[in-house]
Length: 400
Image 1 (cartoon, rainbow, N blue to C red):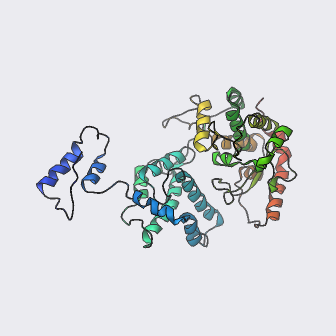
Image 2: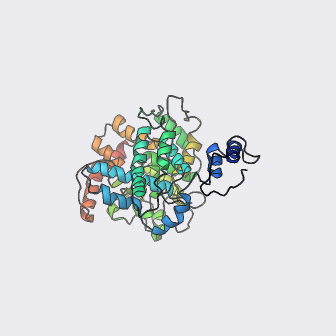
Image 3: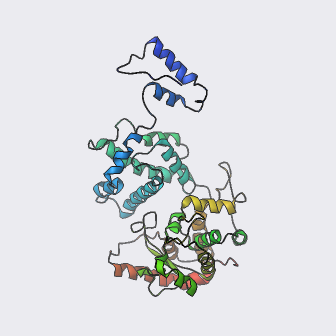
């Protein structure tokens, strides 16, 4: 290891320092072989590869959602269409969700946080789309660099390096298609899932097309099932009590991102639950651990499922049969495939009107309908009533 040196204003031209530099870069001592030349240089010159770490405690203490603050200050009144404003909000929510389990303030990312965010997003979206999200988040960081009341250093922007490191992956290019999968393939894989909870999650995601974050966010008040044992047992957790489910049986309510952090749909949605999904859910709920948590799905450790645990479930049952590498024609089947499958089934196989599919996906755009509960209630029920009968009749059967 290079010995520490006291620096004032050092003269790096001296022979001694030149020799130390050469040793630091080219000859790390045993036990330090993984240290990069940049890290060894940083050690020599009293610098660090992660200068934002020391700011973490102070920024956590501010107790401010700086992304919401930036949105209200710069985006909310910007002269752009609402869809573009929503896009900023979704980017900010994605980033905050990613950083939430790292122990780091979301405005103080290290290299590793950016790397993992990029690699995670590249699985389910195009490189161009990931770059847009990064650029949105980068705007907040750059504003904080300019704001002299905030501690973000003007000479360190980790987003620049990340965008450079992944330049080729973040270029605009046509995203790979998922492989051609038949309904027989779907049935075979689903029937092979023996774990009751994993089968319920998979069936629920395939039939409803909800994103992984949305599945993990479903609470008991937002689902109703025609099964007395289940409804009675989970009554203390408020099963089926959401206002949006008034008068509706066998359905799930998915709030929009403005209501539920982590959800990405722009429109609230009530989605029918068909008999097969209801059966899979009942089987799960009759053995689900009772720990007081109101999330519908839990891991084996009793924690709410998240994107990583759902990805594990899908890879466990769909790979290696439907796993593909970078050089292959197709992209691997992952949880996001359920959204693709549901949309394709109803649009291409059953010729659903496009607005119906957009409603089920929660991504229909249109004029605001107001924020009063009654107006929202009528809006959701109007669209639900349009699609319910056709959905129940035409949703793909899994033979469960």
